[in-house]
Image 1 (cartoon, one colour):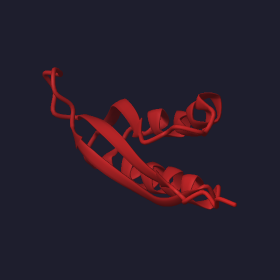
Image 2 (cartoon, helix red, strand yellow):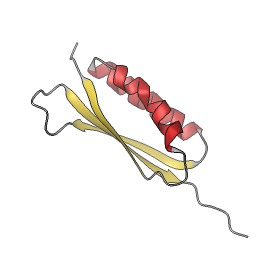
Image 3 (spheres, rainbow, N blue to C red):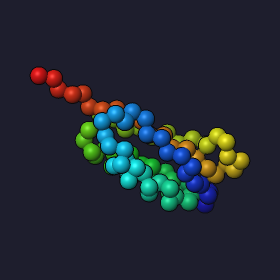
Length: 88
């Protein structure tokens, strides 16, 4: 198995959701120690964020982390897009 660790998580597009809630959800990704578990944990977090019902779309990108000498560290970026608000 390929060893892999999460070095950074960025969530882009958060405006109205509390940071505390997002940070609480992210903690499981840092327990990953193989590339497979990193993928599974990232997909589970993407699913949990999508199930909140406040996002129209949640996308995830996994990339090698810059600045680390070892190739087993990855950066995970989530891109969230809110549902449109209804105006009266």
